[in-house]
Image (cartoon, rainbow, N blue to C red; front, top):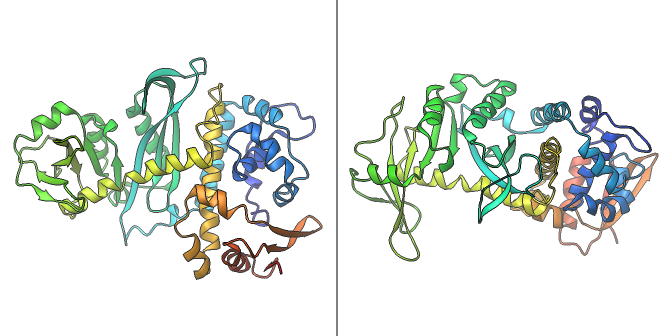
Amino acid sequence: MRRHGFFAPVREHVQIQQKTVRYRPIDKLLDALGGILCGAKTIAQNNVTIRTDHAVQRACGRTGCAEQSTIARTLRAWTAENVAQLAQVSWYDLKRYGATPHHRFHDTRWWVDIDLTPMPIGAKAEGSERTWMGRNRSKTGRKTLRITASPYREILHETLLRGTATAVPALQAALLEVETPLGWRRERRAQMVLRLEGGFGTTEIRNWLLSRGSQVVAKISNHGRVQKLRHAIGPWQPTSSPGREMAAIVRPHRFCRATRQGVMRTPQAHGGYHYAVLLPTVPDLEPTALADADDGRAMIAATFCQEKQALGLVKRRQHKWEAQPMVLLFARLAHHMLLWSKRWLSRVPTTRWRVEGYGLVRLLQEGTTVPGVIRWRRGWMVSVHFDPLHPLAEALQQGFAALFRGRVRVGILR
C-alpha cells in the first residue's frame, strides 16, 4: 500500500484545523485506522495495540504512534467539511481498488442491498433520540443507512440519521449520491436490483424507485396491507426453504409500474404462519428464485454484525455529530482494506482456498496476527518470514510471494 501511495489521497485532501504539537492531525487519524486493523475495539486500546508494535508503525511509514487521548481530541475537532473530504477519498479508493466500478453488467445482474442498523448511544449525544433499537426497543441512539454492493461486499454509502428520523428522504439522497460518481444512467439502473427491507415499505418510495427504471425486490410487512392482499391469492408453491411457501396475488397493489406480487408464509415455532408480501420487478425469476433472492438480503445484516464484532463499530461512539460519520468512514476504509487484501493475496490457489470463507472477524483474529520476523532497510521492508507452527504460514507465504513479485523476500522460519 505504501508503494502504491494508498494513504496519499488522505494526506492531501483531508485538512483538519488543529494545532500541531508532535504529530499532524491526519497522522493521528491514520494511527486510529492502524489500531482498528490491529484489533482495537476502542480508541483507548490503541495504547496496547499499534502503539506498542513498532513493526506495524514502520510498515505504515510511521516512526511513532499518538497517545489515545490526543487521537480522541482530533476526532472532536472534525467538521462537516472534513467529513465531505474523507468521503471523496473513499470514493477515489473504491474506483481505484474496488470491484464494483468494474462489474460486467452485460453478463450478470448487480444486486444492491439497502438496510438500516441501530447505533445505541447515550441520551446526551448529538442526534441521539429515544426510538426502536433492535432488541432494545426503548433506548436512545442514532441510525445508520447503508448501501452495499452484494456480490463484492463493498460499502457504497453510509448516512448517519437521528434516532427518530425517517429513512425515506435519506434513501433518495443516498442513491443519487451513489449514482453520480459511478455514472449510472437509466439503462444501467435497469440492470441493477435493489433489495429493500420492510422499513422502506411506503408506496411513495417504491413509486419513486420504479419511475426511475430501477429493478426492486422488496418486502411488505405491514400487517393490515398483508391481510388485505392475501385474501385473493393463487395456489401455494413450495420454496427452497423447508416449510415456507409462496402464492401469487390475484389483485395486487397498484404501483406506477407493473409488478409481480406474492404472499410468502413461513411456519413459526409456536404454531401458525408469519405472512409477508414480496414485491419483485425482475421478470425472469421463478417464485423459488424470488424467495431465495429476498433471503440474500441477510448478507448486509451479517456484514453489520461482523463490523460490530471485528471493528468495534458500536463501541466507537462519539458524542459530537461530525465525529461519528468520520468513525464510519474509517471503519469503511478498514473494511475495504481487509476485503481487498484478501483478494490480492488470493492470486495463488492455495491461499485462495485457505482464506476463501474468512470474514472480517477471522481475518483480523487469524490472518493479521501471524507471528514472524520482518527485516528492514532504509525504512522499507526487505524480507518477512512466518512462524512455521501457524496454520496459515504456508498459505500466506505463497500469497505474499506472488503479491511482492520478488521485491520482498518471503519465507518460513526454520
